[in-house]
Image (cartoon, rainbow, N blue to C red; front, side, top):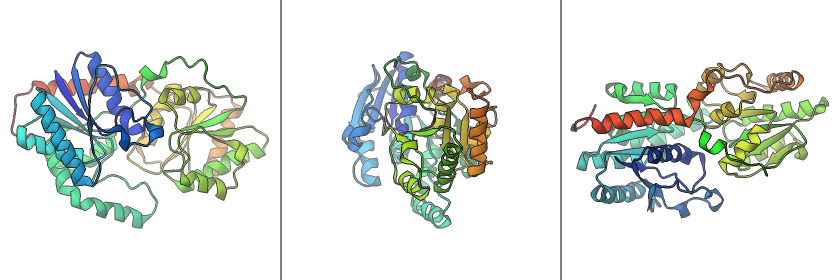
Length: 390
């Protein structure tokens, strides 16, 4: 089978946006399929994020997706058309975001009746605004309005639409009721193929730390301050605990560190690391943490935390996808403020809790989720051609 994967975020880019299609394409090649990936040309990504390698056996084509939305869409339309003329493509998978790949998919369906799966890592028109500010939420929604018809067309013409959480799927089904039967959930997950690498020369530390993999202050400034004040209080009480931030140092984190007068020696920032190196640091942590305010999203670090099986202290809304998942773990503690976090951290340290205790963690492996993808791919490619599936 010839499978086209349209994924602007892809190796050598090592950001979280590339992980889902990187894992899937490796899986498909191992299944003996021919996989062609269209990606943004590497120079479009910051140099320090270009660290991963294209999986062996994957055919890669670069697209100069520079300029505005329409220019990027046209660049992909042109390249996709060339690929469809060069290869007998059985099915295509379009990874969003960025979202200029979605109208490109619809265009190819209109012109060549090319079957495709539309994969939303984040929703488009109804994507959550990652802020507490009502004016900013309204502004984000307004900026998406001009694209409503493009999303509608792309969803209605797709053979299958996939999202990463049950809540996202429910939201999308509410928008497009006629399409609800073809909207499915395929979780992100932990990539065990990268987690079992031998990093015997990795660093070791003589102090306990709470690890944050990826973004720290990006999603919620208020929660971040509460977390910093909690760690500061823990150290004032005589216990030793540092924060290990495995990711880029962002402006919100810097501002929060200054606002809380957080001791410099208690915050360690590793910068952008290779995925396997990050997992190695998670394995050595006393506990893990995540800080978000959104309701529907899950992110990806939650699955990495589940894999390393460390207790979790997290800030999130009670009515959220993250709480839905972590409620099934015996040692995951949701916090609203500094008091909650201090209690949770002390409990973990005093009782020497070392495991998360998550029910059926294997269901969140990339392997399991890729198998679901493969089942859908085979089913769609074997169906008789139709004009459009609604």
